[in-house]
Image (cartoon, rainbow, N blue to C red):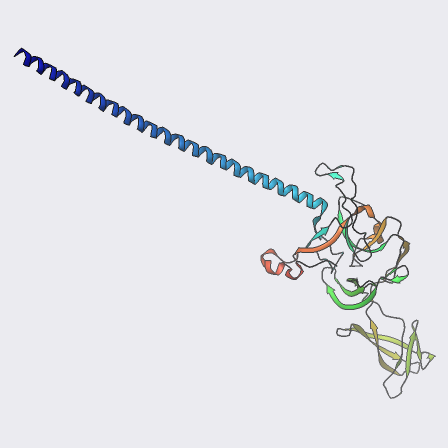
Length: 369
């Protein structure tokens, strides 16, 4: 019996030990599960934090990339503007009809040798400058952009009509270089310019080297020649009528008078018809017609010789241009570049809400000659 009690007690101890081990195992398992869960939570938090930092880093990188791209673009634009091309806007009509008010154009700066900046922007402090070697030099017929000699903060654009050593003269509105016309002149049309309030005459100039361009002059609408004929009358008493220096000759003999009745422009022929009433000394009167070409405003200038290192510049709108006739010769050092192409154009007189009419579509992309 005693032996049985001992065995039972021993079995109970073993059972308790097993139970304790089971309990301990379960607790260790619970602790392990808890640690695993905590580890997962910690891993998730770390992963989320890592992703957040990566997003912030990417955002910073994107901002930095944009800033760098903008800075590079600005630097490239500045280099292009200084060394290659520059944009200009036409503010006046001095180069009509080659260039119109509202034209935006690009200027080739390196062709004549790039001139480095001569002042610091904003504060406008002058600094030393130099000019790079030129690929070519301006020649008559080229359209050049330059710093206005009387105020170098302003940029002007005109056509070079003569270079150093050449002699310039304007006689009755006609330009002569070294005693010869600037080129072969052909009358194109006569139109009314509402902006200038007058009729203008368009001419095509063709130079000996084949280069051609269009100029315009204001018409001298009041011009009436003091001579005509000799003209043959168509009445029954046929006469030959002539006017010399304002004096009337009939059949070669002085006498009588001529009264201008009207002066009418013949559109298709580009000339005027002048109708005169001729009255002889014996009282006989009759009408005759004379024909007169359109006349530009009379103007005389020079002759002057272009000094070394200078050009003579004129606007294509010859009677409405501030150029070398008024402010003198153009120093070669003031030249910025050669006009290249019209990249945009619109009419300042047309309101913005008529945008499709305001834009001069046919001028965009046109080469400047």
